[in-house]
Image (cartoon, rainbow, N blue to C red; front, side, top):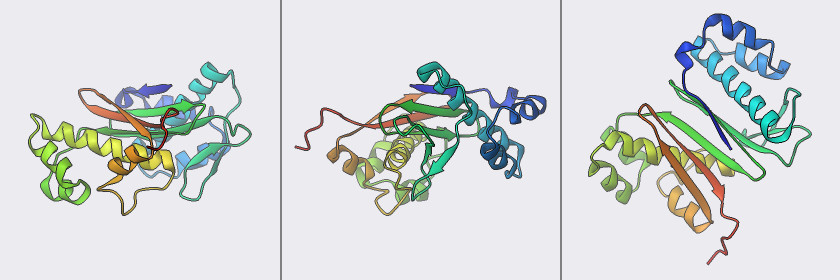
Length: 197
């Protein structure tokens, strides 16, 4: 299940202050480490989305506390069977919750600047982007797909950036992308029916 909060601008300073009391001590400390208000809001809102999802999907009302994998992927202490992933951009925050490993990335639509595109996309992806009616949107879609796969596997962005989507397909990873006016998000999961052919 995916939860989105897409109105960060309307989340007031007063709401931010009130919401800090709804966080675990661990998450509150994380939120307060951000120097800029936007970072604090994103941190708080992502956690609140997770809490909402945990209550709705699993009936869990306690504040989740995280532990982290080798590359920083979080999991919920005491709930190893529940998988989640958080992401945010300037305009929205996203949370994916599942019974299986999941990765999500949300991004504001960003400029398809040629040096950046060539750095992180393979030749076929570059061609797709530069021949698209809206190159910025196409670039953002492909970027969120790549990032969601890295977040699913917990590896973090690495040297396979250009080929990660091809590698993901060979491993039976399915990526679904949702496009909105100001942002795009992609969710990556393993295909349970994949036989590794």
